Length: 213
View (cartoon, one colour):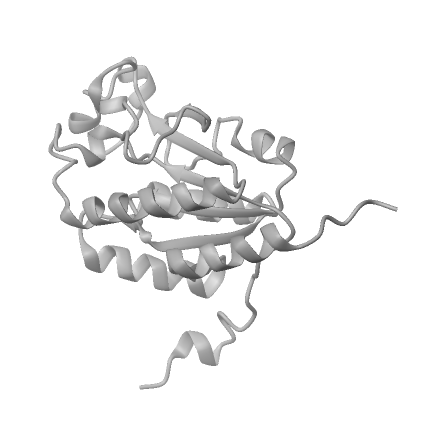
């Protein structure tokens, strides 16, 4: 069967890595990963967290900075019109639901709180990444069809080279994950495995620094 998207030119040009990368970990918090809520029961997300833990440790050893986001809400005025508000109401600041999963978080990582799907909307994420002087953003986290997808689009919209760690992202449903990975890979980002990403990060770490003239 002919791929209509490929025939139309989607996905024709790879994004590639630039000169310096950072990792944005979207909402790997116990409310989604630790079995403490109805939203934390997905084995697909569980597998993504386990894989991300290994990739993150190896990336940190290469000097790659890491930024985490988590969602938390103080009341209905912050929940807004989320259609999952019934489950998200328990995600209050300081609760287990809002706590980052210890498998992926380290004290040296940056952390920001958010309310909405994108890691960038209404947050300091872009400013932190610019401060780190990165041009490449690697996205991982959950869920692939929700906050991960929104963060990928906004990373792209902020002008970052955007890479997605496919095996470090998860969703409530494996098909939703696959559909969204395919879709963002056609439009906004290079979708790669954790091993492929680590190989690129090792290459960058070994490359000589280029000083400004």
